Image 1 (tube, each protein chain N blue to C red):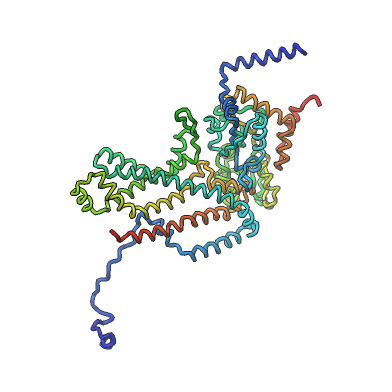
Image 2 (image 1 turned 60 degrees about the vertical axis):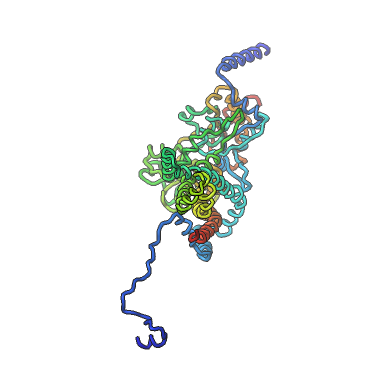
Length: 294
Length: 274
């Protein structure tokens, strides 16, 4: 013990018999970004390993040779990618745009000073956040007509448009919560300062509060975008011609051989991963960047 | 001859005038107005309606749809449908005509118009491992059987023979379940099973039973069109396809295992004047 002190020459023993209060480490929490955080934690080498081991395992089980399954997939890949996956991306972008628009409006009702509007907003948000997405999709699909006549012109309303609307509803409700959270996270001193400078409530909101919120809304917003993108294959149940529907049709055209299931569904998995993984990585990075500022 | 012609014309005008009161012929007008006919077809039922790698929908039923469009002199728009929405589309007018592997049943005739004669017919059978050596439908009693969601025969096989049906969304998944031994047999159309067996990748499997429920397939038009011009026209085309051998020719073209129905219809409706 004495030699330790001598070596360091500091007078602090390296070890101590005294009771020490270790720094507090908070328990891991389920935050709003949990899915994205989980996705972003996957390392590249893990993905590579999986992509190498899994097909080998799959082929070892099935009677099919690597050649034939890959050849079949290769034949279909351009069609599945261009007509299937890009369509999923389109659905997700349109749903997100619609959902964000609706969500911001809904979010503003949540902080309204007028209690009936606040009550209405709260009810709507609670309803759409807690309803199963698939059920919402079915309701929208069945409740909307297949074409609308607006001022004498015929506007067709195909299934995928209904899917966009159906998916945007739960997204809007969750965006509303994000908007409310971001607005409430701005220190109340900002409101008071604005009030003292005789800004109206509207002016304060649009010119002072919301510009500060946008930065901190981006990570959770992107998180919901990733979740929404991963939910787009749900539309296949409604008969929308997206990735999963077309994959099933492709397998049908190839004689419905069970050996094709793994390569074809694996292809969907890889595409969705390649699309959502960078979003998740970026989200986590942005979140860290914005977390301690302001 | 002249009198006969006059009589026929008279009869024709008579029937038209009777129907004219109730027939709006909305579908026919819509098709002519737009210069386009929307036909609901399957994109997941080889070889009747399926996709080629370019994404085009092809198959026996698509050839029939093309025939209809060509006969009417309009453009053809194919609308891929599934079992759960095909009748709704016809009812709503989203599609003018449906040719989508639909079995003709009494219940369905209450919802949509199904003009005769039926253009195809298939029975129900099972694909099962040779090792199990099924001899009779009753052997399925209490055993797990894989099927496809929305197939009308699931119910009858489970009611009549006590099979426990688990229904999958598509045939590939059901067949995988059969290979994984989650069920003892795969319940499907006999012509499709025959094609699978012929493909050579089902060496240890067989179609051991007598086909059940030989059922006709029907094209569908809106209920209001059934007794009107459009329904009558479709009816006439179906009749001609049987009589001219067009359907037999298409069955051969798409390498469909014959169920005997088309040959029987061709013989029955054969032209008496060669």
